[in-house]
Length: 258
Image (cartoon, rainbow, N blue to C red; front, side, top):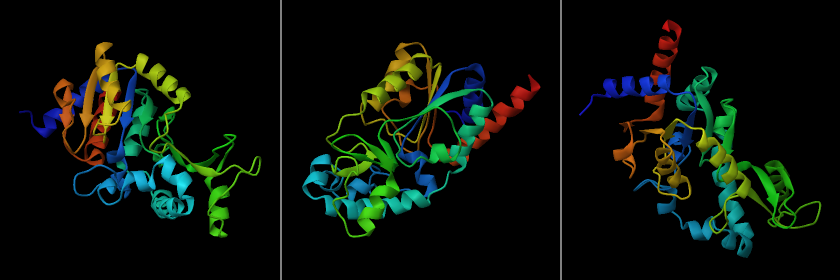
């Protein structure tokens, strides 16, 4: 069993040896910014509420006002959140020329706030609204302002169709353009760095297997075990914000020496 220091050193070496690193980030990346995750045993949001009652496209259409009340409350927490040390470490890794881009399951845009570039958002984001009829996209404030004025069926100014947050709900497929962008990034990846994802939601959970089949390497930082731990070069079950900044600092120092 390797010590934590040995694992940190090993991860820094893997990063130094790689040129096209892709980070795959999940809810564990954002919990350190105060955003509740969905699936953690005992604490996950989906253990407190029924996702098919409050986060499915069918329930949204059937009871828009009830769903919007829940989403506005959840949204306040997201909008208040700020990038944590893990987000900032990824940005630094990108500036060092190592990180190609980020594939994220999160809708909070904290990677954007941390000024990381080349981000693919699998599940959309909480900062936009989208018309369910014509597809017109607005800033989320356009929809929120209608709701705050008592209109719990916010509508598109173009076609009067109903608006929804521009995030993927249960019962909705992922955007084909999103999957194409992710596939293109994965095709050139030589190290996939999984950060805060339990790797149980597909198709995202497929990407670690795919990069391994292409000859790339896998590293994981996640509090809980995942089904892909045995296939990874390095697995660290600690907080991302405690580990990743240390790893990136080592990479930066060794790059200076070399």
